Image 1 (cartoon, rainbow, N blue to C red):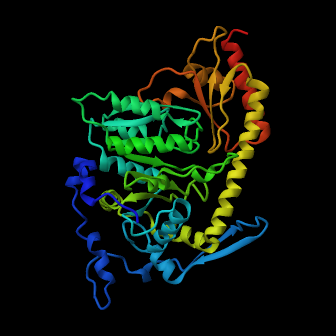
Image 2: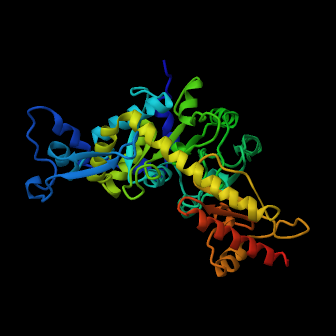
Image 3: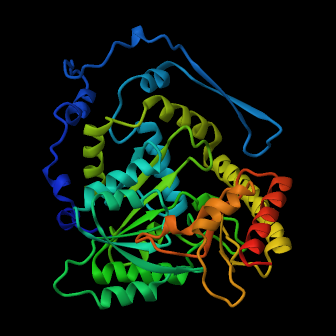
Length: 435
């Protein structure tokens, strides 16, 4: 029996804006339309007979045999649902599929105090979660380096970003404990910790099982919510078995409800389809949905219907087979990139090979005497002048500052382009070292 935290527990975790937000006077009544015999005069939905679409036909590669193709069609009631306004949290068909996925992958079953909400990519629901839980000026725990895409969310709220150190084994629980143990008594404790546990953007690190358990224990001890941003979960290609997520490990605790998880289909189906989802405690998902209802009403019904049509045709086994093919693809890409780095950057840079995702995070050895150095001007100017473009590490530091690190993405380039790009980086570093 899973013991979920009570609904009232989450009141302290909601932002002032979330507490003041009222349910949509129209969308809040949508479920009442479903009662048999009800004649609804409620919503200003356009009449579907005026829509010109009659079907959407899809052709996709078979997840088990890429030489074969599978044809699916969105038509009839499924298309009608996809063309019309729909529930704020997502189409029921896709929600059910995601619930089943989360049970298979993370052991979380429906009816145990959590649910799912579909977003226009995981960035959409992350943004709404931050707005739902964080007040201007709040202290926020964030791994460092951190995904640059979330930093503006916290910076716009003028948050006190408290950096938690990371290394090749993921977020450092020892750093997190030290921060919390030495937290000033006069200052409100942080309510959230943001972390990317698999193939982190930018570092490529994957948090180990011990680290995850320690962070979860600290979440319970110091009462904060873990924002588990996991877009690279299915892009894991390490030799060891995939570690359980925070969302799954939470089941080991006496009570569940301190993890708000974000998944994305962008890296495994299509980034342009913009489908992601949040899974977590019902009160937090309800607050996120209330934000959606006044911001963009819902994630587009048609993209949800298209995504579900494909996923339903594949089944969970087909989806798993597809993600395994994708992870093998990125492992091969990683190996090609690391091979080029070994040939050209040995002695000029330091790195740890990622076990997930699509990024290398490497430290430039810019000075012969071992000084730290700074990658900013070298990468933005000298490297670019030589025809190679990467990201200097400073953009991933929550509080800014200098760093010798660089992030390089290996997802798109062919072997020859990788070889040439790394050669150009070598020439740039050698020039900076005066060689």
